[in-house]
Length: 236
Image 1 (cartoon, helix red, strand yellow):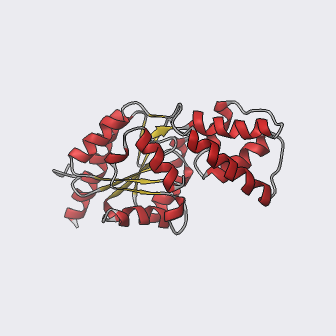
Image 2: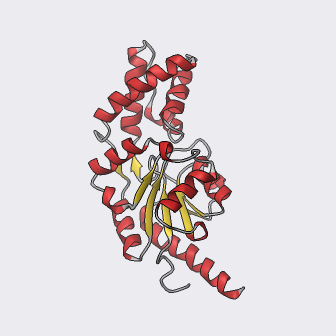
Image 3: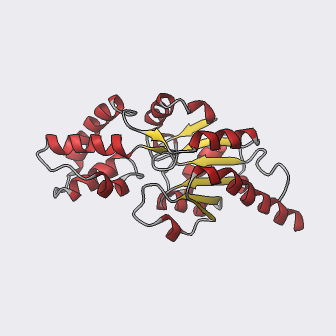
């Protein structure tokens, strides 16, 4: 393995279901809307896979699961109501996954540039990260509104890499779902997926370069990927 494999490398993180367990507050807000509309609330476990493609998609899927199709105009009204409630309750129960903060600190100590690449709106992402006291670990946060297209489009990940002055060839996307896998593959970046996030397709079936089951394994996984990359490049 190459020495200092992480120096100057970019580690791009998905937010919901990867860095932070946000399901209780996201689904909690969705259930507030459902109840206000006279529809049954959804169990947390069954609604978790609806997270990851932005709030509009989650609301649309949630209402479909509760038995109601939403027209575009009504979806927009519900989205606006969702944002008001969610912002006020963004960190009531949401917490970083175990080992997250220690892993971020270890990656930074080895010279990696950390960036958030999320389909969540940027301002909501920053509010959440600040509320959990982990915002200062990241050099930039690139949400759906700051990217030319959202994950799984490669341009979202490329925008995050560009924001921190990185090289896509020395970038690892760390995520939990098909949107993250799609963006990494389209951008030709490395891919690490976590097994504990929010996904309709099991993370193992998305063929990551490395699948991890806890953040304790992340620093070594990143070093192995980038170290192997540098060794291969040196042999050319």
